[in-house]
Amino acid sequence: MSIFEELSNNLQAGNTEAVAKLTQQAIDEHKEPKDILDNGLIAGMAVIGERFKLHKIFLPDVLLAARAMYAGMDLLKPLMIKEGIPSIGKVVIGTVKGDLHDIGKNLAGIMLKGAGFEIIDLGKDVTPEKFIDTAEEENADIIGLSALLTTTMIGMKDVVELAKKRGLGDRVKIIVGGAPLSSEYAREIGADAYCFDGISAVETVKRLLKIT
Amino acid sequence: MKNILERIKAGEILVGDGAMGTMLFRKGLKMDQCPEKLNLDNPMIIEEVAQSYLDAGADLIETNSFGGSPLKLAMYSLEDKTEEINRIAIHSVRKVIGESAFLSFSCGPTGRILKPYGDTEPVEMLESFKRQIKVAIDENVDLICIETMTDIFEAKLAIDAVKSFSADIPIVATMTFDPTPNGFFTIMGVSVEQACKELVAAGADIIGSNCGNGIDNMIKIAAEFKKYATTPIIIQSNAGLPEIKNGEAVYSETPQFMADKSQRLLDIGVSIIGGCCGTTEKHIAAIRQVVDNYNMDKNNS
Image (cartoon, rainbow over all chains, first blue to last red; front, top):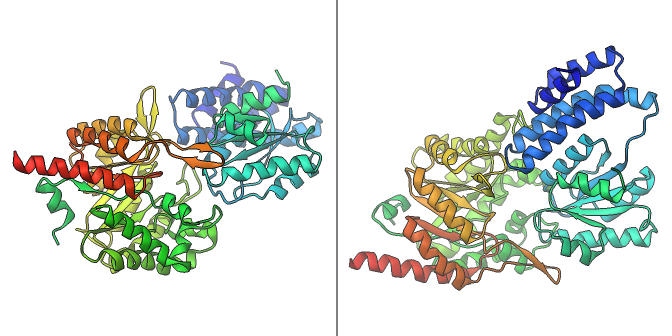
């Protein structure tokens, strides 16, 4: 088994220590950081995402795998920055104002990070201004809005409208997700895309940014 | 008044109440407000909801304390008000119902995820539940309803918290399941079978499911519970899943639809039927009729 396969397998098993150890080992063996990321960590996370989607595994398994993934990424990040390897895209995410539910948002963040995107997580109860200010300052490609409540999802429209008002409409795409949402609703409020769940956020963002 | 467990044991089917949140939003609760803060700001509204459900014929009336654990209240920086919020939640309902119905103390999830998956120590969560539930025990509620749980460990910590104060207060424990191709599981991966075994082992007296599903799925979940449960079963279904129409959440299942389907729950052997998100006093009144007919037929046969 290659070290990348070993990394992927240990990540899937949520074995944080082994993932950290194997990532360090791969670095010491002068493997390319990008290869370690793509063929080890991202490959493992893709399997986790797929299995979660099929209901073969559940949230605890994803959270444990995510922790293992972060352990590996923490070691790779300084090297990637040093070598000037850009992330494939920058995504600002958060749960909209008034909403304190963050499982879906966290899941989307985990999966996007696991697919190689840079994530700026604004947390819960985020105002439209905060979303737009951060997207501007960070020069983000995507804003991801999450809501669990039918009463708070209505506030997503405010973010879309503020983005237009501030002239971000063309530069930044807005995606929305959450249990009560639908693609019709996303269209109605003028969002660029609807994500059925945290896993499909990866496909959606790749499609919008034309990443294959 | 007889204990709720004695009434069920005697063969009576009971009716729970409907949604709290749906009613509060209809009465003007804003999206960014803590629902339990209404207990402090405007307990009249809580009394009105209790009165509506009592008038509709509910045998159990729940308190507005679902998010009343200090861990959950901390999200609104209200944890210092834990005792006051939960006490008023109970007083508001008791004032309306007296002894004419059971006062069911609602206890929902903390919103935190336990270690090792999340960042919360079990002891921290246990202490949080204890602080909330101590108020309920001190105020002599008729039963504790631990609900909308998805993590079996969190549910068990809540049961442990109750047991630390009282060996005999009736405990209802319900979880929220999602349909998957392999059967019903909570998002944390708990099957109905596991829920039945572990909730009862922890000391729950009545178990079942609430929220997350309309009544058709709840009928399937109830049938699954019937296979494994050694206690009476409670089902509190949503009025379907919310759809957004003109910017408002609309739940499609009508009172009559849910009442008709409730007959199936009775046939399966469910002991308490109530409602969750999207249900109103009209749903409960319609279910009351079906249950009354059933109770009457049973007495006559």
